[in-house]
Structures are given as structure tokens and as C-alpha cells.
Length: 125
Image (cartoon, rainbow, N blue to C red; front, top):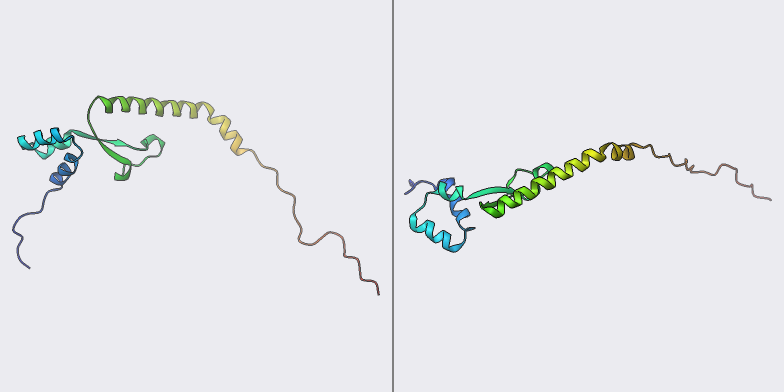
């Protein structure tokens, strides 16, 4: 097999390229003109959970959305934090009540026999 003419493209460069496509066109042009480093492009973004982690959301790629850092993201983070805190407060407050509802024993249904209890009348000859 022939030797490669160049080395592989580092993952950091691939990630910066993918994230740059999420930037507004004018910002992307400025970064390209400056030949900004890959780390600089990556630092512009932060991962945001789609389904919050406290509600069982995973830290895998399918539950993460790379968001451009800014005021909107801080506002969303504050709103997410207050929603999660309220959900936990409500859950804690009503936990004993809901647990008692789920733990009540349900009455057993009466046994259904396959055959009737009384004998069949015999056929008259």
C-alpha cells in the first residue's frame, strides 16, 4: 500500500468545521479571514441538553444541542434551572401521597372457575 501524502485531519479541526457551519455567515467570514484557531471556534459554543439531565436526559450526542454562547443561552439556562427546581420541589412535596396511592393493595378479583359449581342435569331417557 502506498504511503499517505498527508496526515489525517485531527478531530478538533473536524469539530470546528462542523460547528462553524452553525455560525451566522458574517461571523464565519470574519473568523475565516482571521484564520482563527479551531479552539477559538469551539469555545464559541456550549452543549445544551434537549431533555434536561435531571429528568433523565442523557449526555450522549442525540440529547445535546451545540448552542452559540450568549445572552439567550443564559436566559434559557436560568429558565431550565427554575423549571427543574420546581419539578423537584413538587415531587418532594407530594412524594408520600403519590407513593401511598401506588402502594395500596388492590382487591383480588374473584376466582373464575372453568366448570360450573353445580352438576349438569342428566338427560332423561
